[in-house]
Every structure is written in structure tokens, then in C-alpha cells.
Amino acid sequence: MPPDFLRHGTQGSSEDLIGTKTQNALCAGLRGGRGYLLKQTAYGHTGLGKVCLFDHTGLRAEFFLMQDLDRKHPTGHYFHPLKRIVGVLHEYPADTKQDRATTMVTPLDLGISVSKYLHLSEKIVSNVNDFFKFMELDV
Image (cartoon, rainbow, N blue to C red; front, side, top):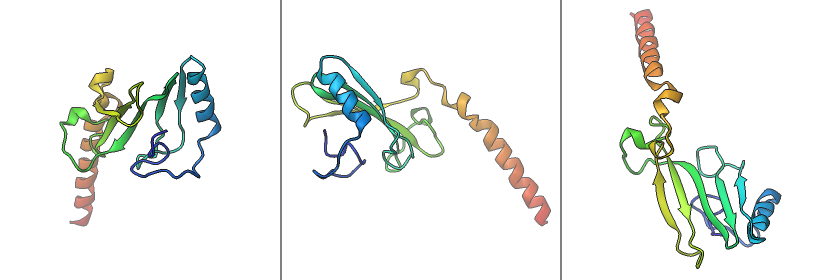
């Protein structure tokens, strides 16, 4: 497992143990099948887990959402534009687990219309209207 498998941005210690569900998915992959894992343990600061794929080589790929406050992306790149949540895919080559490829996955890549599900335009209008109502009370 990569050193940051359990906690984003940190190096795991040899005392950190993977859970039973992770062990089951890993074993299914190592036995020649494919093991998929939906981790419930929060990874990073989004409060969400990640999705992992295991095959005969071990961990093959993992996808998770993370807050990216360091870079500015087009609005369509965010799963939640106001919180600047982006999708990250780590893929591990079969020959070595040291050199992973990291790719940003956008909602458009997955055929998702974020504004449709978040109703952001309605929320912004509602929040602005609420703000003006609040201002009228103070006048």
C-alpha cells in the first residue's frame, strides 16, 4: 500500500493496519479477481471516503474527492464549485507501486451536471434575497 493510503497527505506508519473490508478487497484482487472497495473512513478534509480497485498486482487505482484551495480551475472542474472540491484519480502501474499517475477527474468526464444536482443558481439567488431581507430589517 502507498504510504498515504490511510490518510491524505501523510505518511502511514508500520503500525497502521488496513481494515477488514480493505483486506477482503485486496485478497479478492490478489486471487485473480477484482476487488472494489468503497471506504467509509474520511480521506482528506471532505468528510468522504474513497473508492479503490484491487487486482492481481494489489492496489490498482483509487478515486477520491478533495478540496483544492491552492489552484484555481474552471467552474466545470469542480464537484462543488463553492467549496472547490475536485476529483483525483491515482493509478498504479502493474510493474511498480512507487510511480503512481495522478489525474484530475472532472464531473464532465463522468457525465455529471453538478449545477443540476447542487441547484447552485437557486441557492445563490435565495441567499442574496435573504441577505436583502436581512438588510431591510436593519434599516
